[in-house]
Length: 98
Image 1 (cartoon, rainbow, N blue to C red):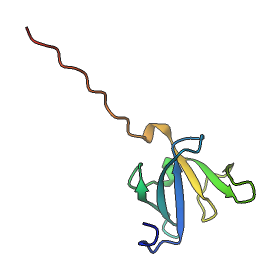
Image 2: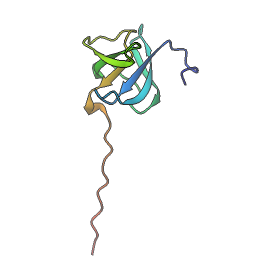
Image 3: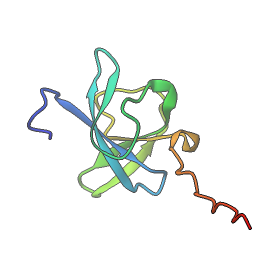
């Protein structure tokens, strides 16, 4: 999927601060566009939806939370607010009519 796009910047969406991968997004800094490329998550992400920003440290081989709140090309991963995740509705059994 990454080879099919003309994007130069990519973002990983984590489920929460546990850094569990959910999806990959393209990021266009000049237009502030974040669009889903593959995985589970919203089709697009706006800056207001972003809860945390992360930078990957290649020497430590881990993601570290960035205290900033503004997006830039140096951001490698993000989390969104938990209420934005779609929760599957539980199917309740229908009452049997006697």
